[in-house]
Length: 339
Image (cartoon, rainbow, N blue to C red):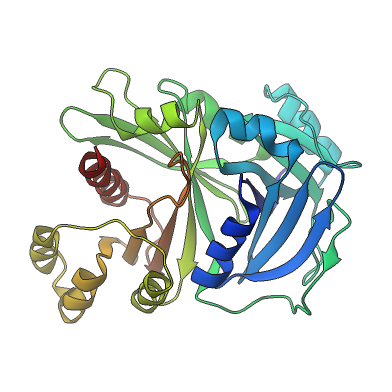
């Protein structure tokens, strides 16, 4: 029943052309294939190992009305589709609407999981619909983005452990780490679950219901429940990627200068890079294996539902409390500035 990889993630959007332009013109994705039927229009985008489907049309209207622009499907490849479906239903999932001839189950909020056989075919569109290829593609499409490091999923307070157990029973995603972040008046729990292959990583986060409402509560309100908060794209050189994406229109969250004054003391090994990190507002952390550099975008969508992360791992394997706190504090600063 184990899942192996993420076949693709599917974004439902009110404005397909604007979303496609954002990913291609600003973030370097390539349009690979198209699909259309009576109630949906889909564009498959590729970069590195990432496959992103952008979909609009009548079939998306219910999701968009409730949740706004966001990820509606995290499609997973499985050793045995039928056995995985059976395990997911036994763990509490419900059958979900899928493309004709495909199998899907509910995940969280309005997000489903289409289940596809493993392995897929390198260089070919996902085998879930009759795509029309629009580009001559090799197995990968080179660019700044190499892969999908993880997906961050925001859940209702009090549901974190139950949902982590569900992903273990349904898909074989084991608990990798857990952290609690206390920012004084607010709090956030997190559990990271990961496939044995290492190709599927979900960072599950939820607000502490005993604390004051904060940014996660605000996301849950805007999204009308649980949803994908952000996609984390892996890059080899975050400074160069950030400069390029920023110049092409991607807006990133800012970081106060005092952060970099303290960073100099925390990580003297990064002293030669502090000026570049400061200029691009890139955050840094370290675990026992190495460094991690990261930066978060603002949401390009009207309801401020989905945003993106660039992450460069220099040996780091973890999702320590400092990393999770960095995200929380960066988004909180931006939220308070907007308000």
